[in-house]
Amino acid sequence: MFSKRYRNKKKGTYYVLLNDNVKNCTNANDGQIMVLYQSEDEPDLLFVREKSEFYIKFEEVL
Image 1 (cartoon, rainbow, N blue to C red):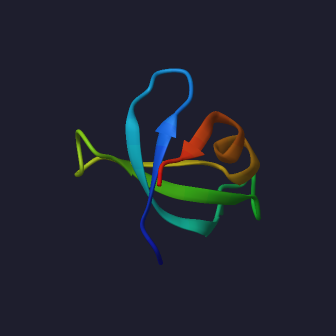
Image 2 (image 1 turned 90 degrees about the vertical axis):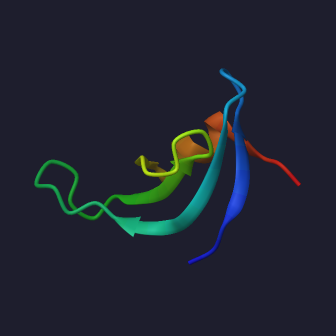
């Protein structure tokens, strides 16, 4: 696992990418690769999003 900081291009909010190799095991999308990330404003709240969509909607902040 790693932690990289990303900004949502639309909202401007910041998130920490925790892992970009998470497997979706729900019946409808079994095997889909997801990313796991968390809000900097609400660190107890975790999110998942399809990997290619994440890299379109978010940009890394150095």
